Length: 149
Picture 1 (cartoon, rainbow, N blue to C red):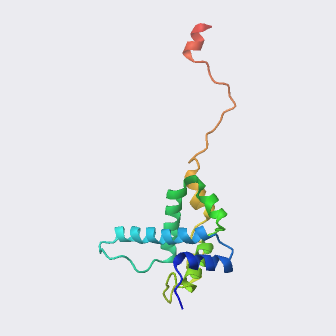
Picture 2 (cartoon, helix red, strand yellow; picture 1 turned 30 degrees about the vertical axis):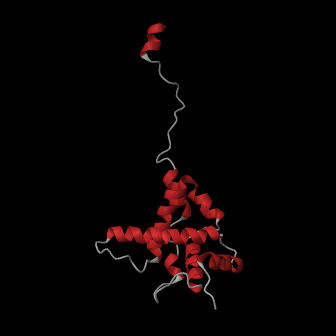
Picture 3 (cartoon, rainbow, N blue to C red; picture 1 turned 90 degrees about the horizontal axis):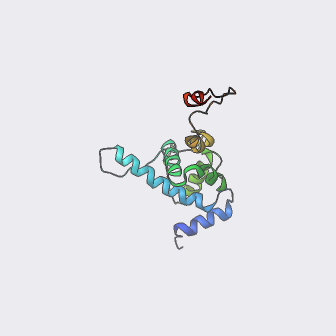
């Protein structure tokens, strides 16, 4: 039996499970690489990490999405069928089932449950920190305006 390449396997997965766009799978692979490189920077050993937890991956997903898509990150996620953290867990386990990723005995779909709210993660960073307060009072005359009267 011939081994399928990544693209063929993603096509096969998305034909049998239409919940998520193929781009979501490619993004997850990129986010995994991004997360591993971030972890590598934080650790002093030069060895590439072999395992990334669900929580670490979700943080990497959020960081990469904000970096790549900016204020459109939430829209992109929704377009791909990604509505919550658990959806990334489903993609991970689809990829595990098709031997594109591996897992430990401790890894479960629950590792991806409610780590963050998508609205807070992808929209909130681009909202103004405080809303301007508007007064119904008429502006006071400036000194220059008073001199002219």
